[in-house]
Length: 514
Ligand code: XMP
Image (cartoon, rainbow, N blue to C red; front, side, top):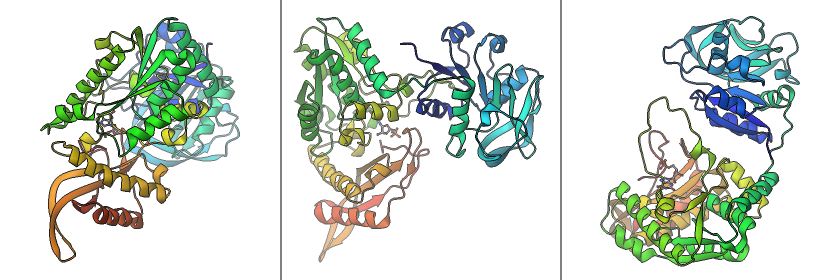
């Protein structure tokens, strides 16, 4: 089925993905494309509306991102320009844009001007909005009129006849409390969308798609990690091809305490997945012996995983397809304004797997954001203990033990980590953080226990809030909670006499310590 589509053209704003999420939350499917997508390709998508995102440039800069000159006449759909998008369309349609004396950044009060506009339908006369811009529109293009102001800045303009609308502020961020209503007005009042994007429908269509591409005699393999994405992908594909899918769940010896056994049981007994559990811990410890460098750890684990997975898949026979839980943020061709991005950490643990095994990919979640995957998972009957689980890195505890990895250190860290997570549940704050875990430091320090001097290991606790893991803030966990975790770890775990809490945000830190 062809869904209604809103196309978001990305000019490099940090908020572009947020625009997409806000649109999809209203039940309207949307895609993000780079601003330079060829005009024929844009029109071929037959969008119900086009949103021009914000961006860091100034429209008169020589290298500023531009649209094709025929854009405005060829698009047969309403257009909404946001921030840079507004300045660009104002310039392109022969209005004028000027740099402000200073950058306006933060909260502002928008005042609507007299006259009816569908964009602000049913909204109050004064709105709190979030601004972040240097330039602003100083002269309106012909045929446009101003619909809102913030002090002396032109904050919203429109040309109803041409169906072009623009706002200087960011309706997509939570600091614009009624921004959602503004976007809703654009989608439903102006673009006449109906909202045909629901999770139940997505499941039904995706199941059909998978059935249509997988041949009757083809077998399918899926690597399970215990996390949300691979589980949802596996359950969805099982709906389509049943037992022709074999899931492989590898214990690399670097999972949380008890996780391999508990998750395997859940896969088998609650989700009735066709799953093989492979305990390869010893093999992983062997390849990790004496490896200290974080990237070398990742590479060793990735390579071993491919070996183990390949050997297991070869036992099945007739395997043509590999299921992967790739999400939309991984596939968006985003605009990099700073050239090719540098590798800070290689997160693609199993890159090269499909090539090595000569398999074709099934990626049923590649159009979805994480929160949408959770909704789909809920509709597929996946229990909350999987859907609400914190993200966990492929290389697992190996990147949380600084220095070399030994089974003893893994066990020590698992015990400390278990206390931390248990207490987060006890205090009912597990779901308030994006991720929480313990890190074993290669640091010993002096302590005192009873009448004795101790000289033992240090554990760091890390808990962050985030929406996508790209940026994060350290979680302001209650002191009585931290006190409880610290005293439990130092009294219950032999070998640890000091607990510290990490108060670094990302950037400049990263979430994991390695
Ligand atoms: P960083 O440490 O880069 O982490 O701030 C951001 C998010 O990614 C996870 N992470 C990984 N996930 N393989 C993964 O599958 C990896 O090698 C890896 N390294 C970090 C991390 O847990 C956080 O959620």
